Image (tube, rainbow, N blue to C red; front, side):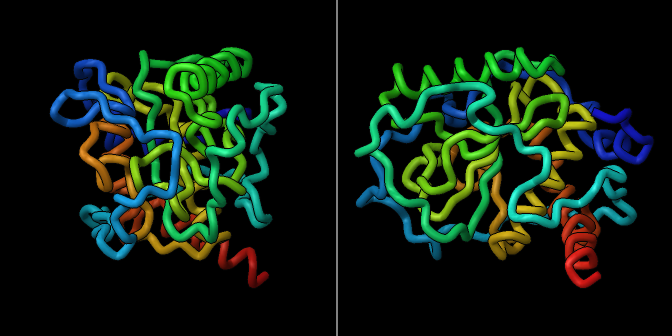
Length: 260
């Protein structure tokens, strides 16, 4: 990873002051009960996509800086995605329990909600990913890790469940929904500048790739009653989706790159 620029560091300013909270998780509802999606989709009880309100853009933040000078992804995937084979040799544990993702029309951002995670070690991130996968498969009975992509505190992007398949990340709302997770507990920590840079750039690249508008980019709590993705990632996403926020700037640069 290259040293962070001053411009990269600024994006974390709006969330750095948020304090710690009780341990939540991507599974914890706001009422304190545990509620994770089951392994079988689509569900007959799923709400139609039209019933989901547009994601709140948050207040327009004039002059929100673009997060860093790193190269903008112009291909079908973000250039720094680490292959699934780098952290696990396991395939689908239950192939009959997965369904086709279909055309991506929305994106949902999560945290893992476990203990805070600040390590920038690639090996430590790989171990945490495998721990999550094993928990999803062995304890929850799912076919695989629930998320399509995962970001670590160093800003790396990891491949999770294949985008051929629906994820297991929002109860009854996994159809056409790309799941992106940030490692850590963002009620108890703030994201690093490197993570925020990668999050905005990667989400922006997937918006461009699939033609997903800003009002179809959600956090978990905006679709289901949960504390995920934690207060600091929630604040960052609200700022990033604002009219002059980081996502708009990523898309502007992607469009300019495409036309060049």
